Length: 224
Image 1 (cartoon, rainbow, N blue to C red):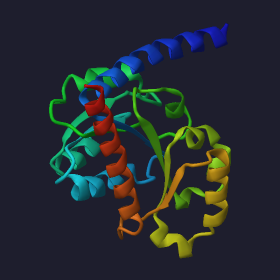
Image 2 (tube, rainbow, N blue to C red):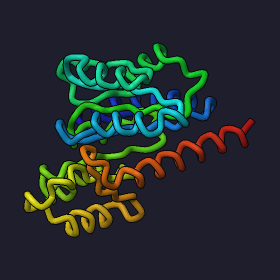
Image 3 (tube, one colour):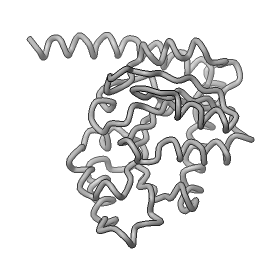
Image 4 (cartoon, rainbow, N blue to C red):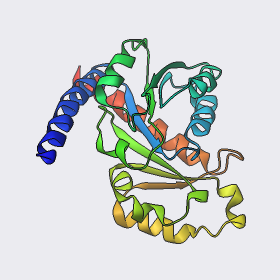
């Protein structure tokens, strides 16, 4: 019976996600579901991304968190449209929450929307939001064993950013092992070692995002 209940919840979520996806497709907006543990550096990554890409890509952000608007305030200072979703203890965003947030965003002139999900390596991976892709941020301080301990989020993600590489010499994080495990879980995934503090590796992330957004816009124009 528990399986049936879960299937019903996921089924209703998938229906709402499909509506979100159709909206993004009509407008040519690339939607990214950004995942990772608390403290992995998701919001810092967004701040750097907005500073670099904000002049040539029109970007909006949906911030998911249990409580507070601290992350939304950080993004707002970067000049982007932002909507905060507080789940009041819920461990993930769902498609209906995202749909409600989209009603508060001007979608008429957007290239990219990033949905920063609740900090968690488990639940958010199970719930589609209508996104084009997921990207997961893993801080090297979390340990190189995490990809195999939490495989679904890496299997589901199109990109994995290994953040805080500037402190790699001060940890026992095995970069080669982590990269090998991630690629074994998801062949073809983009694995990007980065540092949001120093900027190391971020150029590859910016190029990846630009390419995804351009491809989505081209597909929308071809369909018209």
